[in-house]
Amino acid sequence: MDAWQVWLEPLIKIAIVIGALQGAVAYLILVERKAAAYIQDRLGPNRVGPWGLLQPIADGAKFLLKEEIIPAGADKVLFLLAPVSILATATVAFATIPFGYFVPWPGARPIELTIAPGLDIGLLFVFAVGSLGVYGVVLGGWASNSKYSLLGGLRSSAQLVSYEIPLGLSVIGVMLLSGSMRMETIMTAQAQSGWWWIALQPLGFAVFMVSGCAESARLPFDLPECEQELVGGYHTEYTAMKFGMFALAEYQHLITVAFLSVILYFGGWHVWGLAPFTEGNQVGLIGAAVRVAVLAIKVLLMILLFMWIRWSWPRFRYDQLMTVAWKVMIPLGLLNLVVSAVAQEFLAPNDYMTRCVLAWLAVGGCVLYAALFSNVAAPEPKRPQASPQA
Amino acid sequence: MNLPSLPVFLFAAIATVMSVTILVLAQVIGPKHRTAVKEMPYESGMDPVHSARQRFNIGFYLLAIEFLVFDVELLVLYPWAVYAGGAERAYPATDHGVFWVVMGFIAVLLVGFAYTWKKGVFKWN
Image (cartoon, rainbow over all chains, first blue to last red; front, side):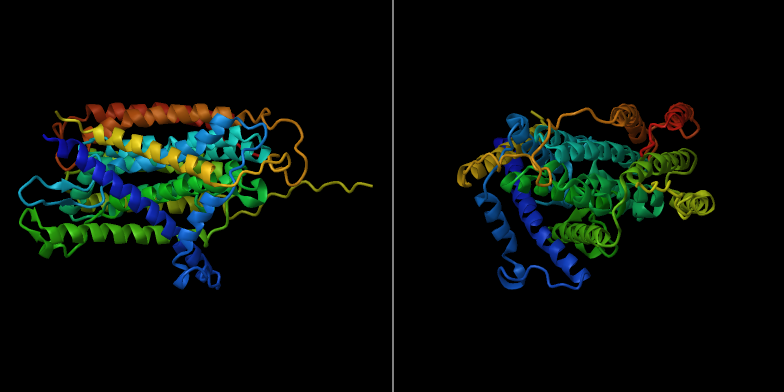
């Protein structure tokens, strides 16, 4: 093992990933603004460059050139530590996420498209590092010395830790199907079985999607910064680049969740009709490129779905948010876990059809239960009328 | 020398340095005109009253404890999922011992979950 393999290869990958991430976030914000505009029958940003294409660059320059204000009475160290910690952890979460299959390299061993390809704990690592973002939220809320920030920080941290549990529960079904936490193995398992795990884990995917949305604080769950109640939430007092760092971290979380949902439930780079790009067991350069493209397109579609969700649902109330996490998502996650475990234990390992039927039966049972017994559709209880004051 | 986790530490170091650099750069480049009013914490245009660091709802503490219980439980289940999962079984198909242990574990967990639910930890108003 030479220096190239130990130091240079990871360094090149890291440079590419960080560059691609920052660029992707900058332009995804433009895409989101455009999508929002079209959904609301507006034009969206269109002044800076053709079709607003230079808008992200202008935004970045503005973040740099605005004044950094630290409020009086703030804990300066923690106040500055918060954006650093949230951005650094959101970035490091990409260490074990594969961006494609491996690239064959003539005359040498193939290059795997992951920063840390040898790590067996892939999925656990992403969750562990991703959840460190809570520290940024708590620190930011506490250090600002502003009531809005404190309340926003408390609420968001409670939300983030609550939804982490269903998120972790839902992926156990995928682990049971794949027998690994390495995302490369999970994708290969789907390619080999010919099933995408969404067909076998519909309940798990639903729980994962909702929790992922909540973890990245997307709109139906954007309680951390609901403008009407908390102004800006935990980043009320953050200006200029420090706010930009929070926004960057939030978008990186979104991209992480999109990558995870595609890799765990939609087959990753796998798509039917890849056979012409595979020569026996060998994946050529073109095959590798096609796989990277397939994964990228799926991730982009998933992000667009998140943007679509954002403009389709009204925001939850805080008590509804917590109720959904603890009284709906966790029981559903446990149900999914038990059903998957029973199927894994008592069915033949390659009997995917029965598993599929079983999983969808569980979904049907949940829908039936909700239709019969839930009080979602019931009218709201009458609030006590305020007595008229003289 | 085989170091599968070395890239992770490299990545963590680079990401931290990058974040700090961005922060410092913005502090250096941006204008600096400090005034007392500008540094006032935002309170909808009013002058702030008292410190913001006040006591808050006990519910957040209870939730944090409940979270810890569940998170540790997840960490116990993950290795089992990897052991029992996959298309090729790591143990004979007639051996259900570990499976029943895990089911018992989940049952015990459910009892605790029902207790906290009954106690109203998840009630917000």
